Image 1: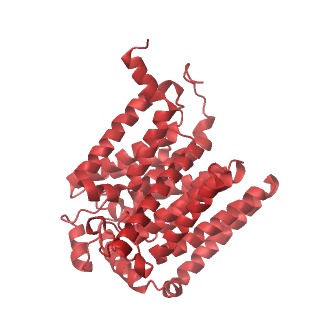
Image 2: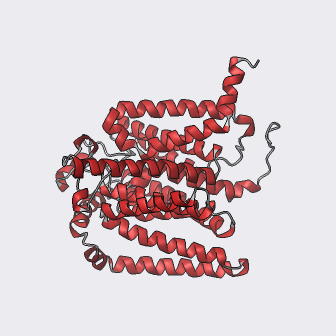
Image 3: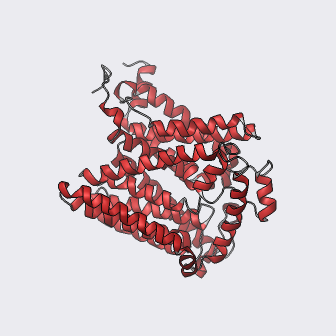
Length: 427
């Protein structure tokens, strides 16, 4: 009979435990608004603390079979280290410590998922979690808007489904709901094409995502969906192109992307009018103008990392007073990073996202498995959305960025060429 510690170690090292913990981590990351609304910040922190303990114990139990060489991309280390260092000059040290701790907590859970599950398993787990959350969102919207005809205030559900939206689901805002729905659509598509789920379930999941996407009525997500569709078509063409011709096609796609980005910038006013997003853009523009004015006071090092904006400290109180609205983020990940950790932090963040995207794109272009297509399409979704939301810096956005970055580094990193001695117990 095995002793209790031996039996516990086997449980913690088992694939079933890793799969269950991965589902719990993804559910928590995508459901943070729901959890905060139900159990508050203390409850959410308690859940995250429990997940950290379980993840650490699982990693210790799986230590002989985990490949640790070149585990963490240096770009992640540099960015998080600079955010931590910003506490030295931050005018709100306590908030910086809290923000960095939250960032590291979610990042560690992402690293755990990337270590113990392969890409295909991550896709399946993400699909299962998002199917449940989208279905729950629709059920609550129907309950609020059609059956009770009352908003569910503590969840932020306005009950506008009877007017065909906009709806918020269990995610707090239509833009976040739209982003998560688009992530779900990409995941469901990969599952369906890879035949990892029954065809009926895959088609039903795509219909669910499509309905949610339409009902959010988010002009931001319309632009993101177009970009993701174009990226998916480009990857489809690349994967069908003979290896010898892929290099020139990659260069052509890069040139076309740069031209399209320049044209979109020059025609941004026309695009905004066409999407009927004028009032929403005006709110963002006033916020960004004030942020840019304050950035000039600390251009190199920034004001100090805070993550979600604390409203009772400088300069965030100034921004609320000047713009006349309460903002939890900068509504632009790139400017938000520049504002909080300056030019150095911005360049570190840019290196992180570009390395993750380029590596994942090259893997998706050259590997046969459809699972590799998931990461670059998710990164396109996050990076384009980052022009109008700061979601990539927090919670599920940060979790997905770290997972994709670690997975891309595992498959395509210069450190993989360095000599290393495998663990004697590794398979």
